[in-house]
Image (cartoon, rainbow, N blue to C red; front, side):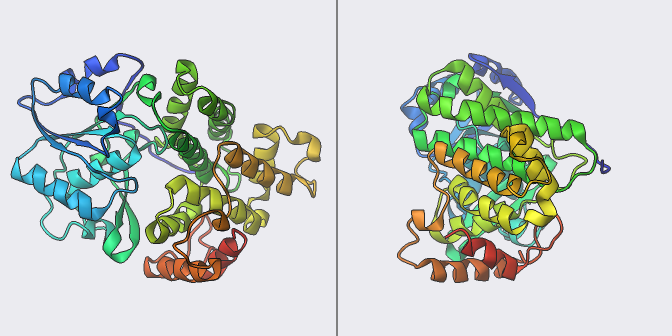
Length: 391
């Protein structure tokens, strides 16, 4: 097991009715930036519950944070926060809104061009504190310090991370997910699944507890994800999916083990250029990446097949079939969740897959993603091979 430090500062308020706990966690004389997305929370009753929880605070609303939040939108929220001298951000939504809140928090007191936080790794001080009310379990952003933002002007999707912008608390009420449309249920389960894979599917370092944690989350998603599609208002199913998505990326299962994240880096370019849903890009890239990296990942791929998908009968680690069978099992799960796994299944704005691949590789190079993966051995040539297998 590798050396690590671990601290998760986010207080989780899990379960129905827990929104009543939010007022006690706001600062004194709270001036709150209430940040949310396209307005669905006004249709399902969540908005009214949040407004009631904020009744004793001074509130400034900012709506319209997109899926894959854009810099262009978030910089407007920064202006609202600065103009009104807010002292707290409450993000109500899925990972995009929470990621956006982290950027707003970091940029609020930043002296300079805020995009530099993402593009140049610029340091920032005294970010605004954040709370989260989760409505879409997927990214785990509610209990980590990671944020991904897209700049439409330059077709760049970049990330930054700091524990200083990790939410102080996160409300996880499974009932808040009942009204999600099937596409978002599907995307959420696939996103959480790949988050686990990025921390698990590397190479053995004798970390059996982390492996078993990861396998438990994967198995839960495989079983409960399709159930959530069949019956979105099954409280227990929604609770299991919600908690799995949080545990997938709260830092725990990735401690002491190597991590990959190349699937995400390549997938980000598909979103930046073509606007595909984040989970859709992961479903496109991961199976092909597993094929290209099969030799260096073979022990963990076989372990995934045996322990998670029950493929021990395929012949074990030494079987010539276990790798292919495991990759196909991953594809089957994605497609069972209604998420297609080939570039040709999606609208690429009229581009052929050949043209698209050229654009994607150029963007990877522009953004410095030229040595990714747990071994740093996925260069542009290998990324091209992965994408060519994904058409």
